[in-house]
Amino acid sequence: MKLDILAFASHPDDIELGCAGTLIAHIAAGRKVGIVDLTVGELGTRGTPETRLKEGEDAARIMGVSVRENLGFADGFFRNDREHQLKVMEMLRKYKPEIVIANAIHDRHPDHGRGAELVSESCFKAGLRMIETQDTDGAVQEAWRPKAVYHYIQDRLISPDFVVDVTPYWEKKMEAVRAFRSQFHNPDDSSPNTYISSPEFLEFITARAKELGHAIGATYGEGFTKERHLGVRNMFDLL
Image (cartoon, rainbow, N blue to C red; front, top):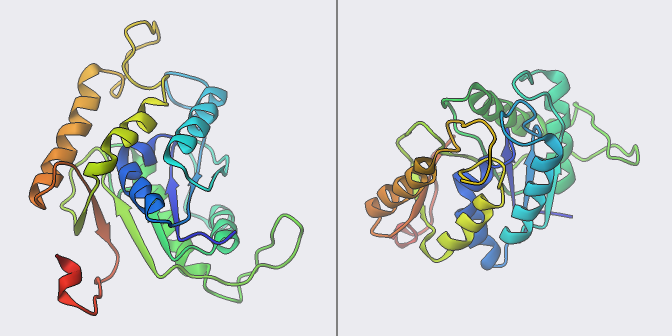
């Protein structure tokens, strides 16, 4: 299956919080979108790996993504090294995305910046024919390099290079976020409180989206940083 966009996340729920509105918007426009989670978030205080996987499946259905995979890397301890890069490269060559979206380039959680570097470097190396990877049947995969790599913005505010208007899809995005019932505020849940389980956290997510949206004359927006200059053939494409 060839995808138009492949989004990577260090943990299940990173995508939902950071760029679900953008993915939903492109799915609504007829694009094929997939998600690859690097870990199951097993170091999280709330929930279990099994719970997080199930919640991720629920969120994927809500968003309408074509596929969601999990590479099972060690939460908190995966590295940007040859072993991990080859696994990411297998996904890139399997789905051949035109655009890759990855974690924030730096953030409160060290896994986010490390995941961003891992995916970015893997995107380049996936285009090198002399690096061999195999699919699940043992066949050698063709080299593939995405045309662009973008990074969503997470907890720490990073000045975006561009903002996507996600106003028509905001409610569905938040429905996907709330699919991670174990992670966010639930007055009936007796699990230990965490940074993201406070009732204020989702208010912060909404406020951030309103701030970014305001900057482009929209109600809600999601911001991204780029790795290279954006190219357009017509200046009106920037309106």
